[in-house]
Image 1 (cartoon, rainbow, N blue to C red):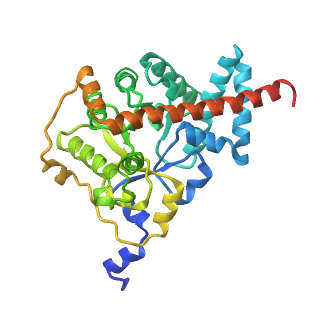
Image 2 (cartoon, helix red, strand yellow):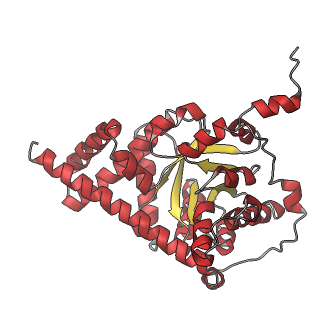
Image 3 (cartoon, one colour):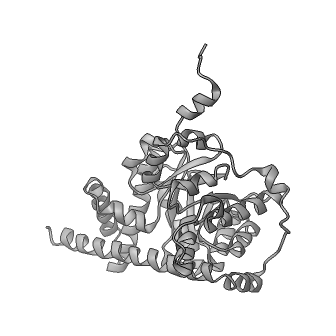
Length: 338
């Protein structure tokens, strides 16, 4: 029989392990070699993370394989590059799925953020590539920008195709309400980028976790979803520090970078469940419905969300272009026998 008291044992236990008792922990990275030691349930990727990983020597074989695939598929140079990009994103996803027991999130090109039909086509293409590799759609979340068009693409993928979606670049309460009404599987509200905006806009340099605007945003969304029984789950994303993570203990899922996972694994402070269904049900939030014009108005009223959504789309698009440029150069070398 152990003589260690429960309080002392909790102090010995890492913040990461305590967090896992309240929340599903997800690794936010394309660097799948950095995942294993933290034993996350799922993993998420985005164009910026894939670009960073694709530059690492350890992953050059995946880039080379994707280029061979793109060339073999034929077509114009643009078609070859597009096929290579799709294959590369899925190749990283396949490697990640060897390391996690759950799901991987693979993102649709941000440049399609305002084209519902193109987002649908790209999502179906990504799922087809996973299925060709023997991975069923239940282990993949398709990441879509939380524009009105993206949310409607998510609705259709879920309803008509049984494809699970992760709505990303989510900053406003209006986006969250529209996603819940579309019955998508999961949303990723961005905690750190909201904090970034408030720091830049107010000149204030620091916020305590309990007053952090990103933490407050996710808490409100979680409470709204739980109070009104929506099936969509909340996965806080884009963290700047472990204080933000711990302030959202109890959220359905949290996707965390390897750097912060490492900090949490070395942190032995007590983690308390902050978000609870009972507290959510007791909140004074009122149910609202948003059609397209209401959504556009309400989202537009939130200057932070408008600026961060457009900025996020631009940044992901810029990194997709950088990745394409890298692929074109390597493709040319392969074709020239270098």
